[in-house]
Amino acid sequence: MQILICDDDTLYMAQCQSQLQKLAVKHKVETEVQLTGSGRQLLFLSDNKLAKLDLIYLDHHMPGMSGMETARELRERGIWADIVFYTIDESQVLNAFDVEALHFIVKNKTSDEKFEQIFLKAVERSRRRNIEVISLSCVGDHKNIPIRDIMYFEVMNRIVTVHFNEGNKRTLFEFYSPLSKIEEFLFGKGFLRIHNSYLVAEKYVNKKISKESR
Image 1: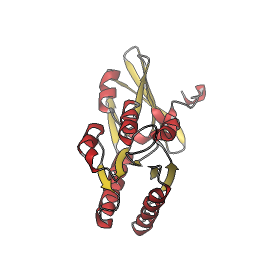
Image 2 (image 1 turned 90 degrees about the vertical axis):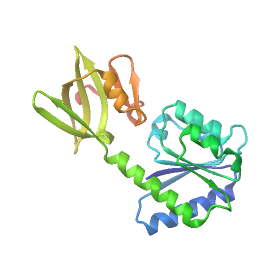
Image 3 (image 1 turned 135 degrees about the horizontal axis):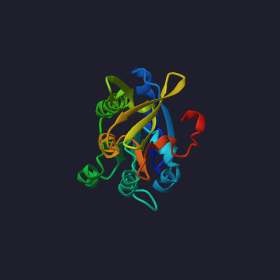
Image 4 (image 1 turned 30 degrees about the vertical axis):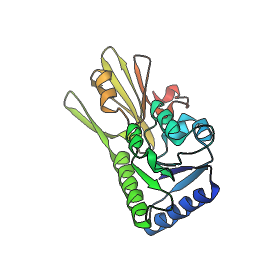
């Protein structure tokens, strides 16, 4: 599970990281935690790295750019990792709904039990996202493809081809569908429409896809 903590207060950031590490051990959750000291530093990360995040703990009061502004920018860029506001400012609770935040933690007030509940909820949501599949059919052939394994869709002469990883090899499957329908189904799941003919998983946007994989 990829987690990022964004806070300009190093003491609170260390406290959050320590709690997460203890919970990860307790519940046997593999985690990798990154740290950033400002919203601008967070947004400086490539979209490829941001798209791989499962959970972001985000302070509100930070120099240069607030946590709420950072969250809005993330959503505008199509980053749909779960966001938990981790702050002393309770006045922003209602605004958190505007960016579809998972929860709101108030430093030194939210109990350890509640912190744990929020973490476990994020873990479960991450697991569901990672095993979610899309069901595709064509001329009697049917395929259930994990969304996490899809590289991109391309359409040509009304035939859509999905390119995906299956085990250790790259595979493709052809079917009939408007690409707009696929785009609608995958909204908020880390895909980016490129031109009229391609729908690409954001984590692959910065990677060169060779002709051999086509």
